[in-house]
Amino acid sequence: MMSEIQQRYQAVCERITQAALQAGRPPAQVQLLAVSKTFAAEQVREVAALGQRDFGENYVQEGVDKIAALKDVQGLVWHCIGPLQSNKTRPVAEHFDWVHSVDRLKISQRLSEQRPADLPPLNICLQVNIDGGPTKAGVSPREALALAQAVSALPRLVLRGLMTIPDPLESFDAQVAVHLQAKRLFDELHAALALPQFDTLSMGMSADLEAAVQAGSTMVRVGTAVFGVR
Ligand SMILES: *Cc1c(COP(=O)(O)O)cnc(C)c1O
Image 1 (spheres, protein in one colour):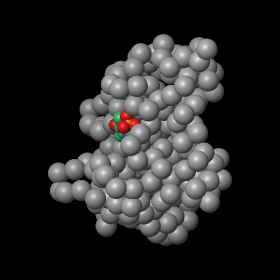
Image 2 (cartoon, rainbow, N blue to C red; image 1 turned 180 degrees about the vertical axis):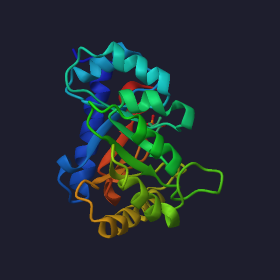
Image 3 (cartoon, rainbow, N blue to C red; image 1 turned 90 degrees about the vertical axis):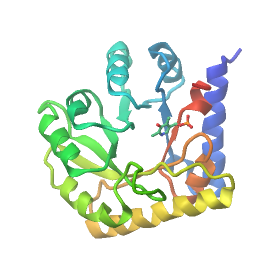
């Protein structure tokens, strides 16, 4: 019999496949990032046993502890997706593979300086405030290109793309519309930067992954629908 987590995981994989087909996109273009914040290492292990490799964490210490607890599982890829303060960059640079929440130069400079020489460059997505007010996290769309150029020049980072967290919207069409704004910005930056590794548009969560895939997401970050209610 399938466990609950196994059923939920397969249902999410199926949602992603269906959304991609609906959008006329190859399902392999959309990666699942399983967001394991607040769940125990043993639950991550259960999802990893189903073949999942990419996991997202919001809180630095919780993430570092889970990474250590799961060292024996081969090939896991750890993504830091939560807000990052400059005094917390070192453990992130030392333990994670990706950071999705970079929204200012100072943070990226510290991550580059602190990335250990024996590890590959740290993968970076810039968090863009695609819909929000002045107090919301993320670089403004109009400042995104300048930040992207500065980040892409840092030696120990590789700029992979953009990440967005739009405010929740009820209707599918409204969700698609805001995700399309992010897709347009991504395409503009992709053309302007001409970086071969700028290939990731991290958007869509449990409630809006179909709309995000419709708009061009390449990585959906799904917590609740995989692990259950936090
Ligand atoms: C928690 C979180 C998610 C996952 O949200 P769900 O609604 O549980 O799928 C995705 N992205 C970020 C940045 C998060 O903090």
